[in-house]
Amino acid sequence: MVKVINALLAVVAGVGGALLLYWVLNFLTERLPGKWEGRIKPYVYILPALLAIGVFLLYPVAQTIQYSFANQTSTRYVGFENYTDLLGERDFQITLINTLLWIIIAPTIVVALGLAVAVLADKLNTRGENLSKTIIFLPMAISGVAAAAIWRFVYEVRPEGETQIGLLNAITTGLGFDPVAWLQQDTAKLNTMLLMIILIWGQTGFSMVLLSAAIKGVPEETLEAARIDGANERQTFFRVVVPQIWGSIVTVFITVLIGVMKIFDQVYVMTNGNFNTNVIAVRFFNELITNGDAGKAAAIVVMLMIAVIPVMIYQVRNFRAQEASR
Image (cartoon, rainbow, N blue to C red; front, side):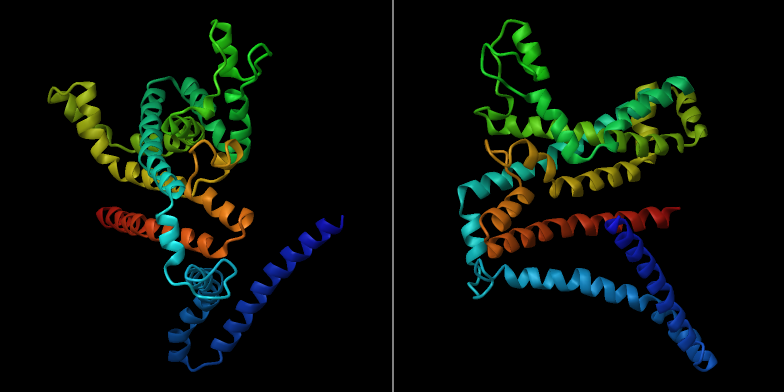
């Protein structure tokens, strides 16, 4: 009950405080001369938002960059030592390769599967389309940790001779083969691919919904014109539909890509980065929490921010181009 009361008080105080703040700002600006009120009022209204961005975003970014040049306790500057130590470490190089594989493979498969499902579901009757889309979208309602917990039972392995509760090993042993430690393979890339399946399973529904909406927005006249000109269904799809929904495809790809670059929960729950499956976010967590090395943890965050910036710039430009073409 105490927690509920505290939560209600926090909501009331937060909303009430915001209303009171803007009421005071509006009251003060209305006391200014006519032309000054019109000039200053817009800036007064966005001032709280700018202050919040500065306090909760810009300041932490600047502090993180500063800490990345300090030792593990952030008490002494060590220059680029954290960066050189990380980039020269074999395990961190494997982490970067794994993250790169996630970036290249996972968003591509998510978009391809989402597009394929959207097209196939579109061919069904209304009831069949709604049912199929609902089933495929359901994993989106599950958190990353819960999805990883579900897939632990899929990949679970027990010693030979014991009852296999893992789905894959139950099938494998049922066919007469030995149980397989799926996430402990000698091939690191295979372990990483098996983890990617979890994200693909969870994100395909998101991709399907957005791309299905984009496909339904393609004017029927353009499709009819292509068919009249002799184009078959495959040619109509790739030469007429895809170019018209390309902006949506890029948006979905970049959205999934940004999520993949900071993937943490699924890898942490499944392997904690062991068996050569580590990624940037898990390595950051282990450096900060397990090893207590704030310097290297901050350096990892800075490298991740640098990697995300070009993607964000491209996304903003792509969004502006879409808006300008409307």
